[in-house]
Image (cartoon, rainbow, N blue to C red; front, side):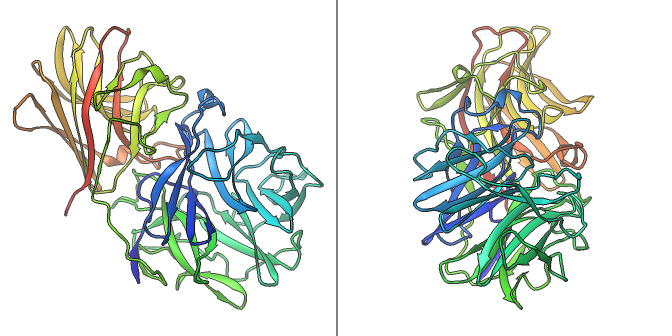
Length: 500
């Protein structure tokens, strides 16, 4: 049956998957955003629904210290003896473990795993739990390390051993161990999470090694793919479906014509076959946008997402440790209180809530009533990559007058794309997105939509933003220089795919 990648669109990097019976659960990285670690559920591998987030208490981890592209990295999800386990890294804090009997009903508080490195994973066998990261040894060389662990306390139960040094591709990370037949398999990522990214594999008769590398590594990489359709493929995790077929979920990007990827690293799915007791991904070790696999359900397309402002859906993201009092649900509408912590602030939490970019070609709409009090009171929509790179589309007070503004923030460069004076009344804001540009439209009261300008998507790409591991979000915000009684009331928020 044919299906289309990515299976999770928008900023959903570092996927990890587990099957329990006929149910599949998948987690991805969330970085500086709260709540942390989205968890998705599927019964067919291609149709997914977010059922919650693994970290829902902002006090459980030091979110207030999360920098851009910091926070939570590379979770792994596993299941053992009636419980789900998730482990991940919080940048600057270390590795942690949480668990749950039911992912929809909440998770335990994090316990710290007493080992360094990043991208941790857990392997269960015969009542024992093994923990693996890319912690380096005393010699400083890249290595995958393994140790027994108590998953309840995070205490290490033996010697930390180096079990594999990779193939020499550099940036050795994202290890996972599996037992298939008579072999232990170790897969890892190498080459860095950019254009040289890849998945490599080794195997051993014993869990502690020695591990021999597959002679035809990597088993997945799009590093030499000249089609420019998928880049950066890597960081994979294997799963056997209920019918005995094997699959790999992995991250990848869909670059624009100039090899930039503004919506971030997404989650892809590729079938795996076994040849000479080695896993082989696809027919040429490359991720594909369209592929044929042994699926049992048709893939459904989600054409529209509409917010329900009677509650906060799982999909909403905020920055760092949010100030709860600045987000109010009132009579089916969302009220945001402006704060002097700005979108450009490197610390603190601005009044901001956003969604992962719906798709490459999409449209996002809202309607807001915002009575300004002082200069630089502003509220509206934002296309946000980081505190240094974003577009704001807002109603803003300047010199005692109200304007519609489109503002570009690209590191230390700021540009006013549009500034038009407006009168009183609710404002409708519409952003149309394509691969290469965003187009902005607005209306006040019952007026017809007016064109406000356009801006290039490339300025919101991680390739131009330096050290950046996330992706562009689409959302709402309110900010000010000095807090007053001003409130921004949003009457709706809709994202939909554009037909091209």
